[in-house]
Image 1 (cartoon, rainbow, N blue to C red):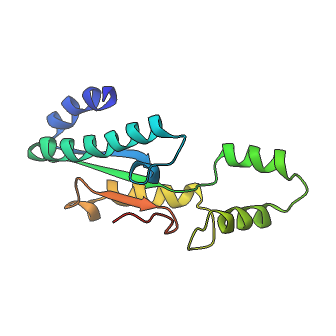
Image 2: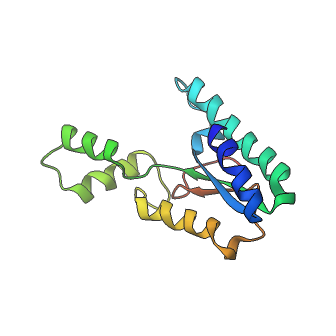
Amino acid sequence: VYAVRAVVPAMQAQGGGVIINLNSTLASEPEPRLVTTGAARAGLLNLTKALARELAPYRIRVNTVSLGLIRTDLWERRRKAEAPDVPEEAWYAELARSRQIPLGTVGRPEDVAAAIAFLASAQARYITGATLEVSGGVSHHL
């Protein structure tokens, strides 16, 4: 909210802009033991929809990229701690299998970057209030 408040005046002054929120598939599919983060993530989906409508007259588009399992430093540290002798690709393949990711692989940062680049581009000029999942097909919600 603070970041949006900070950038909207400049976007209005320049005649438009793009805001892309990063979220998780947990926003639409709550998990036990993650009640607080699930509620906050659902709130971000609501914020995206509300801001998309509120800011559209100023030609400011607002969308969300909702992430599944992505290779991050956190997962790399976990991999190295749990199975330092297991080859990287084998470890991630087993993680994808155990998490039942339909595409059979864990996402990479460049997968997220491509989604963000698309939503920020002129090719997405008519997309606002949307959620684009980068999850390998793992989510089950409609």
